[in-house]
Length: 151
Image 1 (spheres, helix red, strand yellow):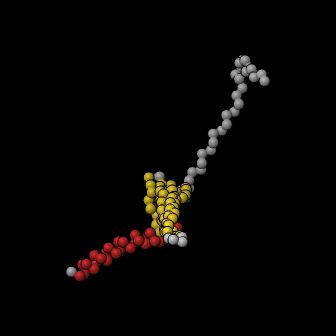
Image 2: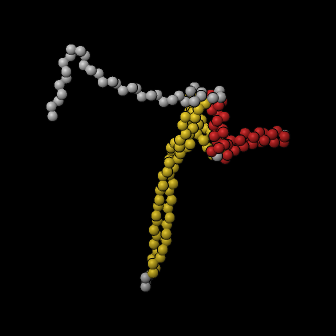
Image 3: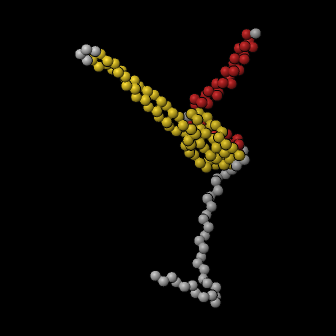
């Protein structure tokens, strides 16, 4: 009976420890994915998280992929509140009075993640060239010339 409990506990530890190490050392988490590429969020140690991301991108794309964007993305907000109370006494000739002054602060900040966006395949295609400017056209033969505005 003892052996089965020990092996069950060992199995649970072996399942939990890699997840904890991923948080401590670095990992990539799927944000979105389709047949053309996707986005991963990096957590923890940047270098190790990037290695995990590269493995995930290569597995998804069958080898070749191109990172097309890296950015900090706001994913939420965090609010912290605190207060401090100072107590004091004032002495008068006939009595002593107590007082209290409370100062409260609230701070809200953005929670961000580092996102890697990639596309499957080789290098990204070059951006599309702007369309050529239209050449000025002359009036057709036999048409009356256009009047110039008088100033």
